[in-house]
Image: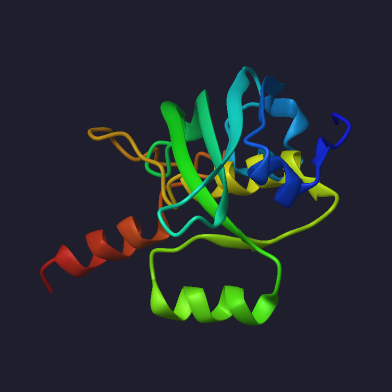
Amino acid sequence: MSDPILIDSLDFAKQRRQLSGVIAMADLPRTHDLLANTDGSLTWSLAGGADALSRPTLRLRLCADVQLVCQRCLTAIPFRLEADTVLTVFLYEDRLEAACEDDDALDAVLAEPEFNVLALIEDEVLLGLPIVARHEHCEPEVRLGGSGKPNPFAVLASLKRKPE
C-alpha cells in the first residue's frame, strides 16, 4: 500500500493549493472485495478553494476504469468510475452539523492538520461504485455444485407432473 498523503486541510483550502496523481487500484485495499481484479489505476486531483459563502472547500476529482463482478452471470463487467466532489471544511463540529442540517446536499469535513487524502480517495471510490453490478443483458450462471447431480427441485417438479 502507498504511504498516506497528508495535508493540513484548512490551510490547503485557504491557500488554494492543488495536488494530483495516479494511484494503483491495488493500493486501495478496502475496494478489493468489490472488484473483479485490482488491475489498473485511478487518476485524481484535489484543489482547495471556497464556496459561495466563502467557506473553505476541497474539490476532489477521480477517474478510473475498473472491473466489477456481474451479480447475474459472475463474470467481469467494465465500469467507468468518475467522481467530482466538493467538501466544505469546518473548524468546529457544531457548525458543521448546523450547516448539514440547513443543506441536505452539503458534503462537509472537519479541518484536520493531518488530513489523509488517500483515505478520502478510497472513500469516494467506495461511494462511486454501484451496490449491485450487472450487465444490461446476460444469463445467470447456473451452478450444480460440481456434482453433476440433477437439481432436487427439478426432480420434485417431474414427480408432480406424473398422472396418478
